[in-house]
Length: 188
Image (cartoon, rainbow, N blue to C red; front, side, top):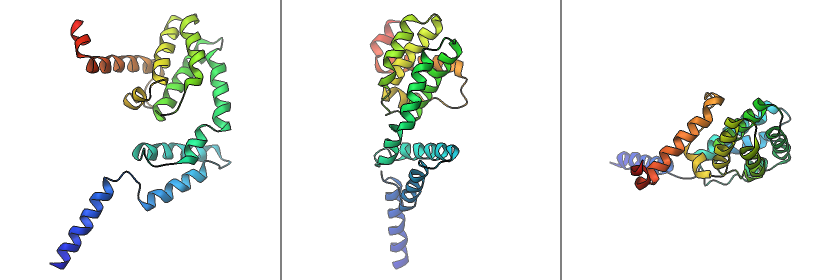
């Protein structure tokens, strides 16, 4: 009888831990290891740590990782942001489109990331770009980058073709709109 009570207690503790919003001690140790790796001199190590931390942040959204959040607003990100803003104004349409794709991938990976710094460049692009399809894609990117809810719901996968990403986002936005506005959906 005593062994049944012990087994039951262990099972209850495991089940409770499984539904907990906080990671286990081993996972916390791994998180600390990855946070330390964000300062590594090797770019590949930093990128791998960033990917793993992002996965863990998705699993444990309420767990505080100040170093992770600080990294996203660090000098590396500020430099990258300047480059992306310049690329959005490039004379080469492919560069502008690739930059839009990079930005929506970043927002998809980090839905809570404030990307309003790109708003002026996106507005200009959506109003004045010589390529009409880039105007449309810039408008879609503007909406997506300014909505944590959309970015959390509509995920951009690595294997998606860059040319299809904005069509997918637009289609998913239509579905979400129809699901959230049944009266409007019936008017069509």
